[in-house]
Length: 163
Image (cartoon, rainbow, N blue to C red; front, side):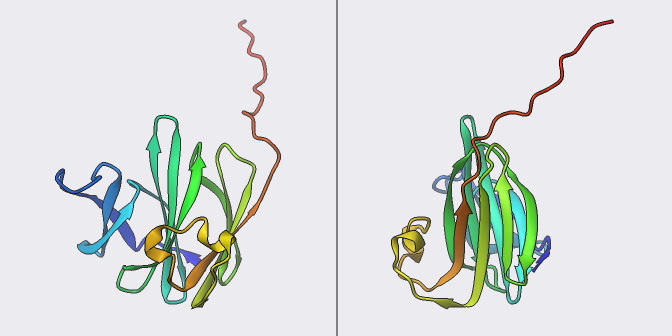
């Protein structure tokens, strides 16, 4: 697994449903048919024949986050809808050839994302909770594990003195 920049996002026409919160994928300067949630790319990694694309939409009170597994043609093969967080993805660490760990600014929780290139069948509640309806009956290729951290607070700043 390694960082890449294969995809970018393109604004949709105003008549497109929920155009403010969604974007069309662009690869090598050409618009693709795939439309993803979010208006910003937070992370892109290649893993074998797939690309992991994390997107987000920042609104006033927080941030919506999504993780997509894209095939070579740019079409989503699997998707996870992450819980709302305060901020962006940070502290990304590649654990193995098919696993990446990260956290969100504003949280001390650690997330491990495992990619299964062959996929597996699972209808366990833990496998279904993050999946949108479109991927409920599909093979699982993305597996997410969360390690709860201590409650987050802003780092203390030293007192300033005026001289």
